[in-house]
Image (spheres, helix red, strand yellow):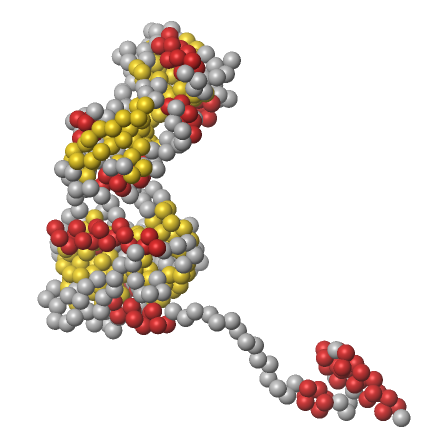
Length: 520
């Protein structure tokens, strides 16, 4: 009677709650078979369809290679190693096992590390290695772009290399020669010497069609492990990472590490949308922020390297800076776009064409210029000796000049040199520039006003103006006294301007600063 009642109660509980029924089954002796029957069928879950990259990888992986570089290492010391490790008279191996330097080199290479046995053996004591000996110095990735053996990689992978070995996906090793390289875009082109086969190759995509959020597959040789595939998405376009005037990178979140440099990023059609060139990483490993050269940039540069081994770029020859909202307001521009000319270089194509300091370049051949980087890329895309129409905003009006571009010099001066200051104080009397937070005096050479002091609570301080700098012009008019400045400012107020454009010279070069003039 009691047993029948217990079974009846259990069935009610099992019906209401499977979990509760299982708990009761642990306590009621004759019921486990009922519970097992209830779970006799395996649990199945219908997963959503997830895209696979296997077909893309199978098609493109034979075209991706590892690039090994050997350099001509000159004998600089009698020590076979590249570095001398001496810790208070102790050798590296005398350090405690938990010493951070010892742990570091054991993990990443160095004396006692995993790469030490790969080093060439030392000669007899007191004898260094032979001068000019080839020695492995770097390893990266690359990919074939033609069946006859042209390979694209990074300039920083092959830079200073004397011999190049290509390791195919199947492990086969082939010698290659350097066709050309371009440091400004970090691209290089290699060619298999005397190819005896046709190679699997890939094509560049139209990266203008690539969108943020699109899948990408990165294939390369991270850490020398061999062909490795990772996947991610395009995180952003047009990234400027401060590596040069032509920065226009794709940002991707695929796992990209050391050794991936020069490796391609593919779309789902197996086309190259970007070439890995840099990562952002506080630790040196992947954190999900990698930068790739867009296919459109790479395609143009590689074609030029293939034709002549070098890249010739147009040259305007002007120092430029961005147009901020304040600067646009001071010049009467409707929007903050274009490139403000700080100064044209003497004898440059821009100066010969009549471009002046204070001009704003707004368009080239009718195409609007967004900012200095955009102008630099547009001009560089033209061949030297090309004549282009440059639209300018000058003294509140639009104008246009024709410029016959020169050839970008191999080495450019980074910035104009500042005037060397005299240690003796200038005898001129300090004066205040009304409502601007600046104390000034006429400069030693009579050109401009030397800044003596800056109110830390002023807009001038917020804009980075400092004592020791020189104001050379206001609204593109040269000034040598406070009266000159006041005259220009008063005229700007009559014209309805709320800011004036100050040209400031410092040791690092010249720049423009827009300051409010409607106070007081």
